[in-house]
Amino acid sequence: MSAGAGATQGVTAERSVLTGQAHDARTSGSPGASARPSRDASTPAGIRVLPAGAGALLVELSSGEHAEAFHAELLRRRARGELPAVREIVPGARTVLLDGIADGRARLARELVSWEVPPLRRDTGEAVEIPVVYDGPDLADVAAAWGVTVADVPRIHAGTEFRVAFCGFAPGFGYLTGLPEHLHMPRRATPRTRVPAGALALAGAYTGVYPRPSPGGWQIIGRMPEPGELWNPAREPAALLSPGARVRFVATEVRP
Image 1: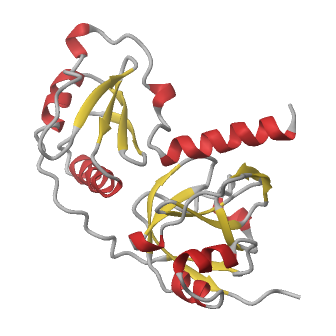
Image 2 (image 1 turned 180 degrees about the vertical axis):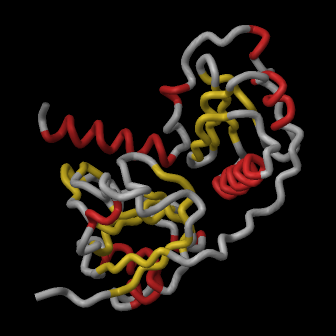
């Protein structure tokens, strides 16, 4: 495979998660008619539930924040024993996948669209601190887009508290929200064929740190000196970041 083709595949995967399509491959199949919820059913709150394969439901939400709030509500109800047996709950950009539903899928689909989901409550647990060196190649472009100096970008970014909206693209990669809308960044017009492990980058509403080398089109503003901490199979859990976790970036000096 050529470098250009590899970059295209990697960037396509990266973009699919950003647009809420990360689980499309898991929604194929022919579920029984008795388990098929209405494909047109939605509520004023913007919830739409679709069958996904033989034993899953894909819940489409109106926005990323709505998806985060819905995911949090699912976890609360499961902890209280109010949710049927579900093997896995996987949040996406604007979706939540409920996989491995043991039984009662049609009933659960009807219930989901009637839920009243409270606004997202920010996690009050201890924040994960990630040390970073703000010396990325796109710092000047980000500063220009933000209307600030290059020196201001690290101060603004490190001064923001982030939250893991969902994980994907690569093991250990978290999509972090927290930057206000006027600081959201477009992807690069020309993606890089290789982004190094540890690169701290921005795209759309998200901040992320690459856990391994990969093609990518995000704006790189810095690097994490020890990216192996993002995904360590010898640790339980292997991922440093999990959906709902608070995250802060700590500016560090360049090591000699």
